[in-house]
Length: 98
Image 1 (cartoon, rainbow, N blue to C red):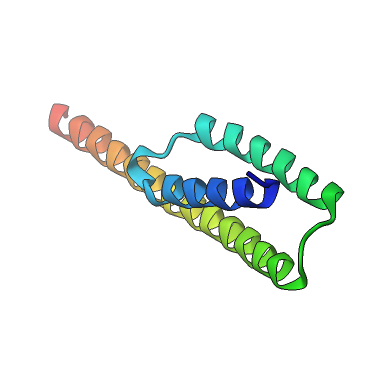
Image 2: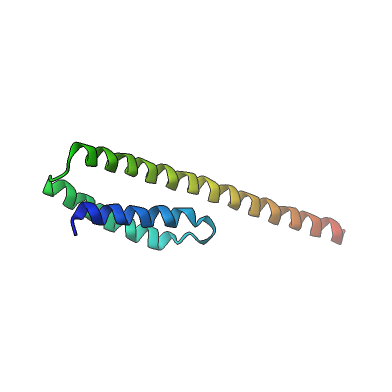
């Protein structure tokens, strides 16, 4: 199996992991990104890639980056809501005790 094929299959797995927002495994994702970097280095060193495949790879890389950034924003918003909710409960408990 070529490095490009392995890279393409790994990208599919990475997109699937990003789609699991509530069950996102950051450690697994980081490990797979390291594997992706290795595959990408192999593809570059082999230099046996067409212009179309190169363009497709660049587009996929950008899409992965954008999806990861979107998930980061989404998880950040969820965290803000959790903290806001926690503060609201604390304020309610304080008022209730007084």
